[in-house]
Image 1 (cartoon, rainbow, N blue to C red):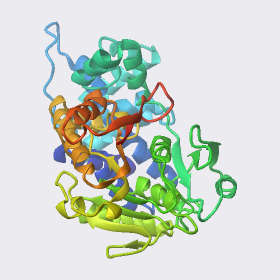
Image 2 (cartoon, rainbow, N blue to C red; image 1 turned 180 degrees about the vertical axis):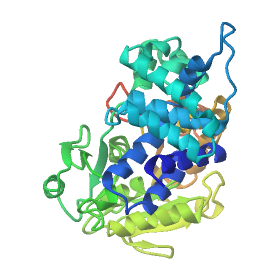
Image 3 (cartoon, one colour; image 1 turned 135 degrees about the horizontal axis):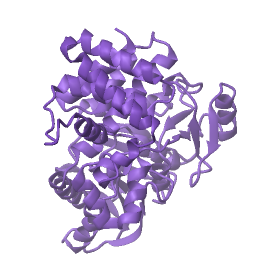
Length: 449
């Protein structure tokens, strides 16, 4: 198959299974390692771009498919709509693809998929798109609403406007289409920032300093696959956004601390917490938990690559892995004596992910007002459970990668008013807004007695 057929099949599977892009695209790219770098880049760009702009692309398709004065929309087969989405995206958003190639390849793709009878229709629609792009009128078609302009569900646009005001909402929505650096945290137990930066730069990677984590992290662009970068296999770095690293640094973890990470996968916070707790005389211990074997294995892979001791049994230091559901109170841990409880509990709870729609372009289609309420309830349950696991002098760090106050400050407020939270104080909190603060959207609150 050529690259466009591969893209079609990936997108069709995502659509048919209502799957997340990463769950389909990542395994597909792994199987396509034999293909040239530019082909993999093309597939990634087209699959992610069509997904990201789906609402806008469908609006254009419906607008240009209206028949006669009645303005009646044509009912299209899903496969044909998908082919049109791909063709329009290439014409409008991929400057390296000549329009004639985007049109002819779309027609050929339709024929290959059994839609020869609609080849003329597809050709006509795409030529209309070519014309309005040449006349710089494409974007004006989308200006009727925030939904079509930013290819974001109407309810979510309204939610952001009502929560943050129209100007800030626009900045948040625009950020999902901006280029985002990859942020990596240097494994300071194996190398230095200077050595890692030089290693990457020598291979043509663009390296810039981090903004709020200058002592631990770098921002990089201009690479093919993260796993092929020098130093990756050796465990010299791990991918971890600055907001995540910064949050762990604010808890006040000391050498020798005993840390419990309740929702740990893929393990970034656990591993950085271990590094902070790992003193020469007082080695640190992190209990990393999550709900499934698959998630636990991800933590194990990352920790072992970084050279951190990992075990599922009793160990004096390192990371201990446990499969546990954080929404269920661990009675055994809760009934431990004071000296055997945790100094720090990290609760990076399941959330709607509205802070990372720029990195995961399909989150906006899976979120809903109902699911956000359910997630807020889950977060509150986990936060209440956390109080039973820490020492009297211990700290709880509650965090999410969403910008929904209902899952953030409102959960913390509800906790502080609950029986479990009445002995606690909010010591520090911060909300990062994407498109405003220069980072992914993120929230954290540090609580102590």
